[in-house]
Amino acid sequence: MPADPSNMLKVIEDFPLQCRTALELPKGMTVSGKVDKIVVCGMGGSAVGGDLLKIYMHDSKVPVFVVRDYKVPNFVDENTLVFAVSYSGNTEETSSAFEDAQRKKAKIVAVTSGGQLGVMAKKAIKIPSGLQPRAALGYTFFPVLGVLANSGIVDVKGKEIEEMLDILSKTDEFRAVGERIAKKIGLRTPIIYASEMLNAVAYRWKTQFNENSKAAAFHHSFSEMNHNEIAGYRSMNKSDFAAIFIRDKNDNDRVKKRMDVTKEIISSRVDVEEVFTRGEGLLSRIFSGIYYGDFASYYLALANRVDPTPVTVIENLKKKLK
Ligand code: F6R
Image (cartoon, rainbow, N blue to C red; front, side, top):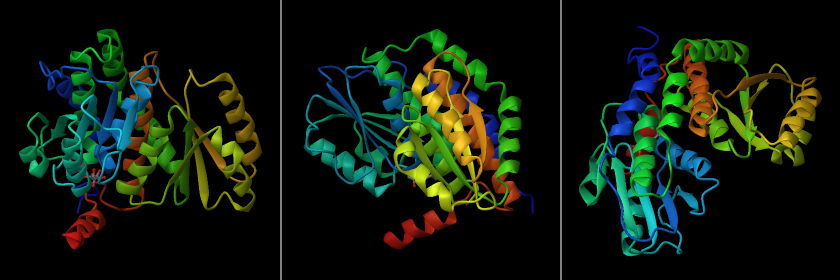
């Protein structure tokens, strides 16, 4: 049997193309009326886009909340724009949050390939089916960004998008870094760190190691880890753990310093690998950071001799809950 029978490698390699296609999907879709907060409801691979939106809108006056739960917060009202994102459309938490948002009279846009959510939603962006939800991040993120841009809630510059697509299209460079990191990790448990700003990028690495590589993985952020987790390194060792720092040229100077000093301190306990995001624009930096991890988790799957595509345990659990 081939190591990657469903060809996850091709799906990862095609990610820049997926982003390009996804950018076209929200064409013409807008929301009207006052929007003073945004809520993204979703689970697992479909929720990550919400985390990324939160990073992207960090400097906006409109707050973004990500809800991974059955209900939305009580502040949700008619001035709240809710995105219900479920790749399959059959995730119970997301469907339930969707219904709750409906009760609270929110403006709702669903992003889904179909399923129950596709049936329930009056306003929906239909995305192509047939992928693993976590491999469809382009399809779950860019339609949301597109609706916000079309509605004048965010300003996304064409130049920023082009830079991101151009950087991601250098697939071989991301693949090479991913492969190197997977080799470095070997049989050890990776712990991924980024600044608080890019915490979601570190979290995406963790979940990709979990789902693609079927491996334990953990993440934390700077500088919070300097106030707790670092103390635990006393009991850790190079044969069990490997640390990965995701670094960004726009990291706060004090965060940069903290990362350097932390590396020095923990290097006696674990090997530390560093990965640098690419580009000037925030979208380039977010997605380049993520793209390295997608490849790293793929190569770690091959090294662990597991098929990167299916997540049987998650499917079985969903069946048991039915
Ligand atoms: C599987 C994956 C999962 C799903 C999650 C929710 O590839 O990434 O984390 O995303 O179980 O399912 P959907 O995305 O269909 O709502």
